[in-house]
Length: 351
Image (cartoon, rainbow, N blue to C red; front, side, top):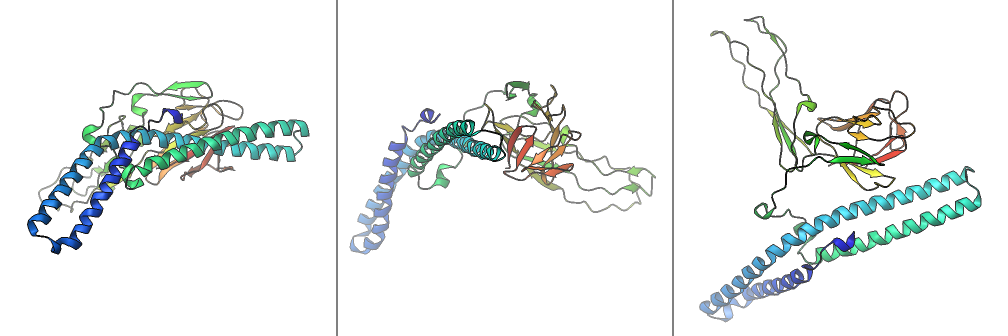
């Protein structure tokens, strides 16, 4: 809720910012008047202003760290509120469409439309208030970019060990294994150099190029994760055999994607994706468990490859939709794609 965002440090920061701007103006004006005074006077005044500027920056530093923490919570709230507004608009459009098809009589349509309009108006007001608070945060900094800088590593709290994190959709809960938890930073994977296939002419041994299995990687929550793929053992070398020039390794950077739930009591909640393939369906062993009409036990699989996140339909004819269109087999997901499984909808976010 917006009332939980602490804005008490903003006024102090704005006061410090104003004093800093005054000092910067005076330091700039000094250069134009430098020739009017003795060097000793110029240096004495400049040293005084610079000392005061450093003192102001030292006073502002802990306040900025506190404000950035609160701003992070505000951004999450804004994202959830935007998702709720979008959901209300889609629900209203669906109601009007059904009414045009003759599904509702005039009285039912009017009553439902009023209820939806009231809900939409309330959510729009909440979004507008959150946007105003966001502007207050920005006004306490030189720019929005400075506000969005990460907190200093030395002052960042040490995170507690991750507990089992459930994914709950419409009252269904499935605990996640710790290795399935999403990473909070980019995962860098060092891939071994490509190896030729075929046979070693001197030994007759088969040479196999290494394969990459995303499901075999492990991840840990709250710390950077680096997975290094071991190189295949080299075949025995004969003294006379020429050695091939080493090939450079390649680096592929993956950023974890997210699914934002649309509809139902969990609207706006985020499900983070990882490098391990995730099953969506009604099966009790599915990583994301959804149920209802038109949902198979293993309905779809979300996996990652070198191009990004891919959605694969496993429903056996029930269908998986992306942006309202049923996919043939699998499809690469793009940012803001709407994934629909049965009556459940998710917005895909990447990165």
